[in-house]
Length: 153
Length: 153
Ligand SMILES: [Zn+2]
Ligand SMILES: [Zn+2]
Ligand SMILES: [Zn+2]
Ligand SMILES: [Zn+2]
Ligand SMILES: [Zn+2]
Ligand SMILES: [Zn+2]
Ligand SMILES: [Zn+2]
Ligand SMILES: [Zn+2]
Image 1 (cartoon, rainbow over the protein chains, first blue to last red):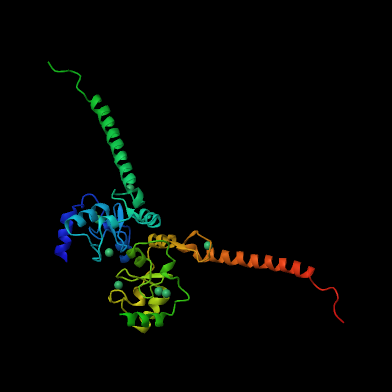
Image 2: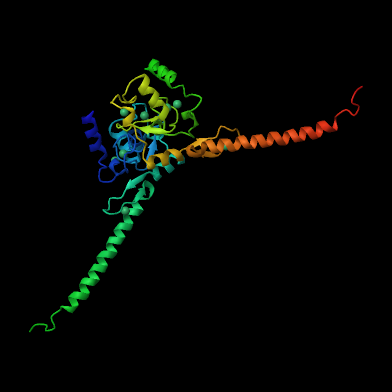
């Protein structure tokens, strides 16, 4: 089972693209964590698709699993072709997008809804760039002051 | 397993108190349904408590299960005494209370968040009583008109 799990990870190769379930805030119940993670890669669901047996997977995960392993559900083994997959209902997507995550930026304690996690993290990136530029300007101001007047020669 | 399930239902006897999972709107994913239902009675979680193994149960269900069956988790069998039980986090309770349910009143198509289901259903009850009273007044108005004038004798 562990071997299969490792093999599946090698098929999907999404470790650097998807968010780990450890981004979930606090002590979420175990069945809830399962409900918002992909049944192929165990990451938080990214662009989820739902099978007729009502299991959920990332779009890329189930597509790659179908091609590489076969047209059945990775969770329960029931038949499942790419044509059988549908989007989860709006009601579920609304809940999924509202799940609070921990921001990876140290010092930022805000709970960040999954649906706006990308925007939130970009805003930190912009802040950082602005800070870097401000620091650069400050450094330039001082370095001008200390510049030697005699230009050599 | 079915026999155990029947026996558990006989212990908890909550069928007429808790809401069935069939109150959930639309085609919710199977793992999400599991995440919002009691691991003892399979109804929608009522006053949920969380075990150290992070499983969830209705308050009354796990209390009765502990007394009648033993101090272990009904879902996974790990040790669990009533003193080990805690409230789920606010983050999870917020999600649980926002889960949309179907109103049992025919014609009312509104999705009703689990957290306000009681209030919503009471409002229908009040409407019904007002309608009944209005109907009674109408009936009285007409029955007065048709009342025989001669009072016998
Ligand atoms: Zn993944
Ligand atoms: Zn995945
Ligand atoms: Zn399945
Ligand atoms: Zn942040
Ligand atoms: Zn129940
Ligand atoms: Zn219960
Ligand atoms: Zn357990
Ligand atoms: Zn209603």
